[in-house]
Length: 265
Image 1 (cartoon, one colour):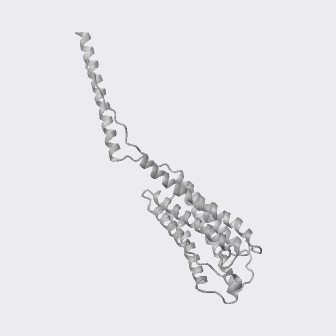
Image 2 (cartoon, helix red, strand yellow; image 1 turned 60 degrees about the horizontal axis):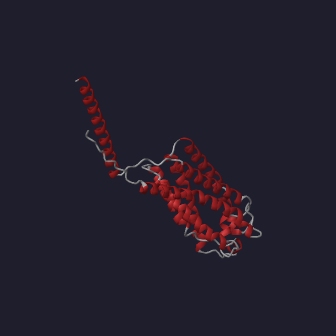
Image 3 (cartoon, helix red, strand yellow; image 1 turned 30 degrees about the horizontal axis):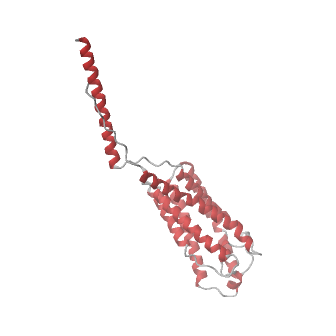
């Protein structure tokens, strides 16, 4: 009896593909981490400054020149911007041909990079005494650019997704536009060192809305399943294995035919 040996070939390792997907997921997790970090900064850092009011003072005053909280806020702020930038690259990598989502990733990267060089403002007392400098003007410019990047990122996510996340992004935009316009009414009060009631509340509503949007976006992308991708070598091996299986089936059929012929003869 003739023995037939079929050489089995193992599929090439998919470790490189798995590592790429794991790296992308790690970058997306940075988005969740960035929001949690910034939320903690808003809660705990004001406790280090006696007399600071989270309801009546702006968030930017926590990093103002010569404030007791600046030395804590700035290093953590750098960590936050690095996490946001990493998240932006993760969103970019998760786009998979979705141009609008790729734009979202690019805007988030720009948002993070710009945040690394944020110019500080002076304290209210200094501004009221006429001690404002170029850094105060640049601080306002950075604020406008940052808010614009946030709005654009959420806006392009409306085009990138459908279903519930699209409506959630639209609702986030409405909240940011409504409550984001209120703090500007008190801009002159900061410079004149006059009371600015609720300015901190309006700002924190906007910040919380954006931080939550980042978390939801990260979770939506993390829940996506990575597509099955085969390298050329893997596809060739699969075809070879399929061909070997066909050969085996043909040979078995031939054996059956021969055995039946031998019985009838």
